[in-house]
Length: 156
Image (tube, rainbow, N blue to C red):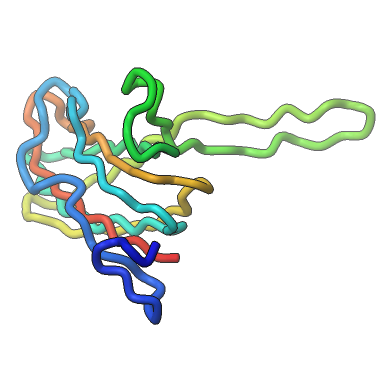
């Protein structure tokens, strides 16, 4: 980890990196075709600082956070990336197997006005994450996409 740009042995946070330049989202609710990949070897926490401007009332952005355990695609690109998932523990009862739920998770931010709004959230990355990327899509008014930009901040 000491050879990473911006690394300092006395700090617990790493460099900030641009995940998505502030720009208009694709139309028709389509996700970014080639989201920016950023390295994050050795870091466990990802804070996403974002900005979104709705183009029409009710505008919102969906974000699909994906991670890879490899420094480069080792198999077909679609198989080198994994979505962050939501996990819900099932009800536990005596003498019955428990069924928990697991599903790919999208994070949605909906603005409350027509101005550029900042937001942030934090997730714990899976063990051995080498790279992350975030695909974005307009999810509020898909016929009138807004603008979105994302910055990644990593910490231990």
